[in-house]
Length: 103
Image (tube, rainbow, N blue to C red):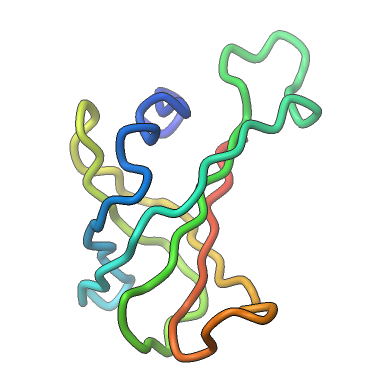
């Protein structure tokens, strides 16, 4: 299923709030902030253009990384998404900043 995910599935979600289901089953409200295609990461003969999605939590969280679930319109429930936390780098340190890479 994850190989069928393309950047255009996330385009309409930019600026929207979604619920990320964490590995422990809890839900974390997040806002989808950016979408970036990474053509230099494309493997020969690959069908999909690699891309990444960045988002931030709307509340304080201790979550760092792990396999999560996210509802995406047109695809349904995406399970097994590896979500990584990234440093705030001058942004509000009270929320979490996260990243998903689709290679």
